Structures are given as C-alpha cells and as structure tokens.
Image: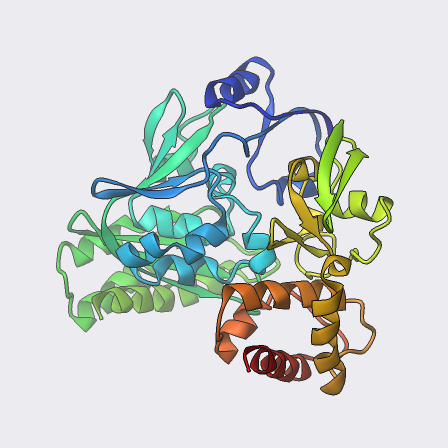
Length: 261
Length: 151
C-alpha cells in the first residue's frame, strides 16, 4: 500500500469534496485497505469527523460510520434494543484488537462478501445514510445500486428482533456461510451472507413466514428450505457451492427458531 | 509528514510516510518489543495499547496515532512482569514471541472485565495466537493472575 497524500478533514463536507473533486480514497478502519496493493494518490482519514457514535434518535438507533465493530459488540444501547444479536454477530471477527480498529462504515462500504455485520444489518432492514444522497435501503446498497463516489455518514436501525447464525472452520475464522433472521416492521426478513458473495435477502422464504410472530415448526422448516433454494452460492477455498447450499437451510432454521424462542 | 505521539509516556516527534503502519514506525523508532507476525492483524503479536485500548499495530496507519498515547509492553513493564511470572509458573511461555502482545491484551482485559468467566477470557484473548504452548497453560496463568490481582 502506497499513499502519496493523507488528509484529515475537519468537516464532512471537506471530506466529501476530496472524494468527489480529487477522486480520493476514504479510510474507515483501514485494516482491510492496508492489505491492498493499490497506490493511492489522496487518502482521506475520517477519524476527525465525529462520526464515532451509537445513539438513540427517537425510536431509531443511529450508528456512526466511524463507530468500531467493538463499539457495536459492547454497546449497551444495541444490547438493550436487540439483545445479544450484534454481540453474537461480530464477536467472531478476528480478535478484540482488530474489532477495535474495524469501522462500521468501512465494513458496509466494502460490501464484503465475508461480512457478518452486513448480514445482520440487511435482515434488520437498516438504512445507509449517504452524505448528500440521503437514505438508501440496505439491500439496494449491497447490490450496488448507488454507483459513483459516496460517503457513509451513519447506519439507521428501526426497532426489531433478530438472530444470527454462522458456520466456520474455527471460531475466529471468516464464515463459510452466515444467516440472519429478523422481524422488522411486523414482517420477517431473512438474509444469507458469505455465499461467498455479499449478503442477499431470501424474500420467498420470508413470505412463507409472513407476519406470524410465532410460525409453526413445519412452516419454519419450509421457509428454511426455500431460502436454500432461492439464494445463489459459489464455491471458494472454504467450501463448495453445494456445501453452502446444504448448510443454508440449517442456519436459516436455527436463526428463525431463535427469534421465535 | 510529521506526527507527535506519546509512547510509553514520552512524547516523540516522528517523520513518517502517509502509508506507514504503526508497527513499522514503532520498531524503526527503537521499540522492537513490538513484534511483527502475520502482518494481517490476525495473530496479535503486534498488539499495542492506543489510548489504553488494544489494537493490532500492523493494521493501523501510523498517521492516526498523531496526538494519541501508545503503550508497548515496556510501558507497563512492572505489570507485564507480574503476569509473566504466572505464565512461567504454568509452563505457558516457550519461545516468548507472542508474550508482549499477549500480556498487553491480558492487562487491557483486566481493566475492562472485572471478574471474567473462562468463556469471556477465551473470547477476549482469541486474537492472540500462540504456536508453542497451546492455550491450557495460558488459561491457568490468566485465571491465577486475575485471582491474585483481585485478592
């Protein structure tokens, strides 16, 4: 990684101008970016922009782009609103040290296929707030709907209930597959990630569950099987596409069952 | 570019390149107790405390340490030595390469978690790999060190 100029703007507008006028690269946590072989002319350090927060905004919770993954893991606000969901989802990520560095904004912006956090945010129907571009639906964001330069200010979460499941070769390894189920706005949402591509919604599976707060076991089983059928998978160093498909139903069933319990 | 960092309580002015990583800057400045291992943030040997919080210095741009406090194991030499005695007593220290980062993470955990369970200890220390001793001896050492500290 070579960086020619590193700037530390004091306002988000200044950061945005570097992004749009100088084709600059934004640094979130920087931990993944630093492994890139890229040569960067202008890098923008966002750490002086007061974007590190997790706070209430009425009925919603806002997570600033520079909140760390460890902030998310230990947030009493998120724990109070969603139980152990976020702690369970991000606690597998490398180690405490790395989670103290990784940023929420960087994780979301990277649309990483291996992301555990993005799967949960997708299931919870989170919104991504982009500077000057407003709120973007998380599913649209992950599928690349917004082309061109963007600067994430915060992630907004409505109330909901959710659960996260994953399978890994070792406890702190990247996931072979992950899944999250949630009830948000009265409806079910099911997300599957590490396919190994970015997380996707299993809309047909969610439709089977409908708005039932406590679907019966047979309905849950059916939804899980539909999810495994409607999501696309690929093979990589960790698992074949067939393997991912075969464990998908189990993870989705466990996630739904956990929400219902 | 120039940054000013408090390292082990001493203010240092350092000339760095914008893409320099903290581990390389610290080692070049003579803090060779900060070890370089996997270079991907996975093994924990490069752990330092930044404003009291453990971070992987191999995955942190040095420019971001400007105006902040960095602590290496030498900055907490007395406390680290106390913990090291427990490691030695439990046969949990062999080549020693992981020990500086491991000790710093244990000290950070001690401040953050008052009376951690075994699961919490294991979870907190999961980012510090040891390829010599396995983890049973380390767990015994950590438990006994925490018990002694809170006695």
